[in-house]
Image (cartoon, rainbow over all chains, first blue to last red; front, side):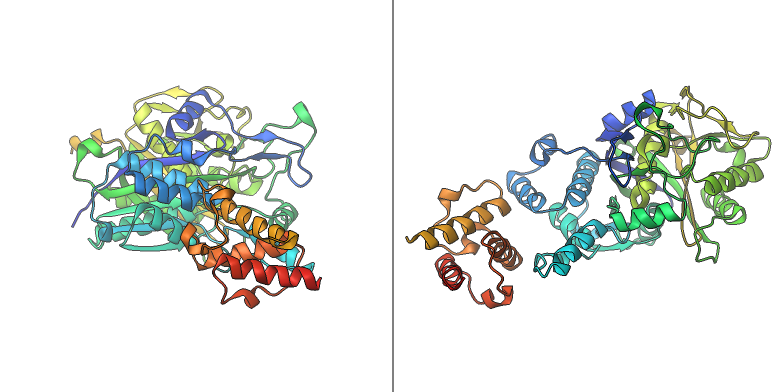
Length: 412
Length: 84
């Protein structure tokens, strides 16, 4: 049975980067994908740009029949599905994984992914028109499992994991468990984008969670989690993917997944808790076999929610006290990608580990809490050994992962 | 082909082409089956649905359940166009 898990491939498709290379550049330069566009419901958001799927997959090695099959699949897919497929293909191509198809699993993070389609279908129905027949399978989140497994020819096992904004963390935890048990030899974890409809936008605004952007044009307040000006999350669309395998081939390994912990607050509501967040971070450290002083960076959940930021800052201060590691918040650049946030941020963590930098928080001028070593408007150049990455979700769901530099394995 | 036949067939052909990448409308033959062009059963329902929509016909899609060759599909569309 393996005891350590390697990340052997990564893919990402979001407003801050189409592919790992571009995302790495945005993280390094602190370039945000968030744009103000004057949309009536929500004028500050980070959307995946339109892209030409066949030309995007040209760079990936595969036999021509498979390429044609994938192009055909993507052609009839929704934009969200196309993004998830692209991220999965990038990760798979990077991994050079040669595991037998029946030993490969597929875990898609997120639930209620297609609400834009639901609303569109309902609008037709109330006008007395018929709903597109293929909606019969496309309304199911598991359509992502079907589509991606067909594209990559995955035969092991597959399902979706729903844990609100912690879905990515939960999916990584399930993948790790499947690999540690020996049931699977590789797992493709795909963060699917949450496509919010105007219905969810309305409710999320009403509970004060969503920041649609106040002001007009250049007067719009920049979005910065943990800054005193933050007033809710900015919606981001993002797909991302990881290939996880037991750590045995150092050459193909990008980083080590040392821990993936979960803890519940036993609370159905939207409010987070200091104790739940501290508990899950401690669990992750224990699983990783690390002391808290060994963490170089916390890739925070940091959404820009007033209460969420305050509670996470308190949890960090309570755990690390006077020895705060560096802390940054990727959502400042990518927006809050909801169901895929944990996977987008896992990719961000590994890029920072490998690049030896801590990405900037471009507008963090007045942090909500002192005593924490925030990365400010300038990135920090630093060799990193261990990153703790948090993902929390409505319903009291807390997750934390530890990603470690591949060199830490040699040293043991 | 009558103008109705022309209209129905061309609409079907365009909707097949929209769904299947790399096809051109002139490659679609009225003597073919949708499966000849790589359409599965869900694709077939989507093509019927879109064609009915494009032709402003309000016919339940289930009425087309047994039709899979393009000529029969065209004829059924024409019958409804005439009734309209």
